[in-house]
Image 1 (cartoon, rainbow, N blue to C red):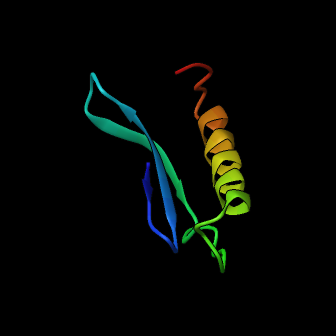
Image 2 (cartoon, rainbow, N blue to C red):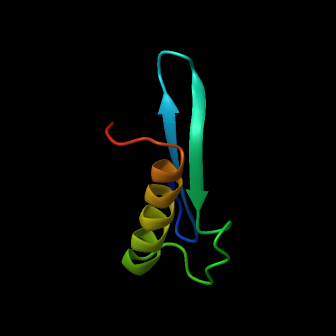
Length: 59
C-alpha cells in the first residue's frame, strides 16, 4: 500500500515467488480525489474483485 494526499495504490504480492498478483489504484479508477476514505473503499473493492477473479480466497 502506498498513499499520498492525492492517490492510493494497493498491491497483492506473492512473497514466495516475489511477484505482484494484482493491483489497483485511484489513478486506474480515474477518481478525482484519491486521498480520502471513499476512494480507499473503492480501490479496496476493485482489488478484491480482481483477487477473486484470480481465484485468491485468503491472504
